Length: 564
Image 1 (cartoon, rainbow, N blue to C red):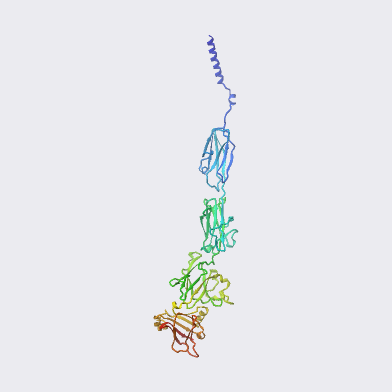
Image 2: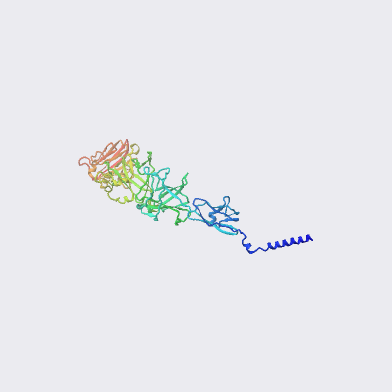
């Protein structure tokens, strides 16, 4: 009986406890503790130019996931890292200590963009942006250094030596300027003696890929400089009508990734001013200052002394249209003759063609007439502007020479002395018999006035000239035939010196025994032929021959005509 009572008492107590545990009040439920995600304040961060990451720190009170957007624009520039792995999303556990992540940048330059990345944190089913990261804008860097030019050598220092100071950039908006109004800092192109054009050499350094924009009259080339992170820039001036009187242009080193006509800023354009001197009156030639040598037969003799019997004498000259060559000869008294110099002829091998440009290289031939003695000449090369001031059909001596004094070349024309000509006396042993006159101003003047005339008839037509027909037999035997006509009494008295060369042993006057025709060899390469005779001997219209022999052979016949 006692055990039964104890059993029911235990059941009753257990039932009461169960009922009490299932009947908690609403007040007791509200007071129970709960867990919520705690997010940090939004951080505004920057990855400075030149650096690759920044830190994002937070203390997660729950398991977490940090992520960045995966769209193409963000993924182009950013990733997120925990220091070990790099991805677009990283997860971790709740922590009582701060967690540090890194927003990293992909290794590529950005000059004009400032990409932004938002870092989101997800905990307990909630997501908030905890950091906004901006990638810093890299500044473009570009420097241009001019090379050293040696004015004494008239050439660049080779190998090229560049200034230690970078050139000043042009910041204006104008793109062309008058040549005499070039902006400060403009570099003028040079024309070294070893090359054929205006040019300048620079060294360029930059931290971006660039292209070069130039005016139409400048071309640019770029080559890597060995051992340096730099490029050698060679600017070459082109010869156009646009810059024939000098020009100034703007050279632009601009970012290759942009349209050159846009200006995104951040030093995307780097401009410098370059000028090219006027070339209208420039005459350039490797033959400038040369002495051209010819023998008595008018054949060119090269620098080795070889007689070029089958090759013309030529010179190459570069100039603009309108260059004029003038030949003057020494007068023997420190001055020159300029009129009537026709024993030198200078001729271009090709005519000027405007389509070939404003500055052209032409080859000119120099032809020199045969001559019994020695003589010299000076060639003037007058550029177009100077040549335009000269009347080529007028009195050249009054225009070119100091006629009030020594007949020396006027000072203003001396810079245009181009080359000289030397003709050597003919060799008697090799060149045969020859008779000629000194082809200077006075001789040409006498011929123009009809005072005398000396003709070489050796190759003349016997069908049209009776003197040639009459002496054709001598010509067939290898003799030379000349005709000397005097039209002035004073000239015929032996005042004209003729040049004579070649071997002969004797001569004969025909008709034999005449008193009006006389010959005298001066022994110095000259001779005199007189038709005045003695007293009243001889009359107008008289004609006779001088026949020259070398042994039994006739080497020359001179038909002498008295026409006064």
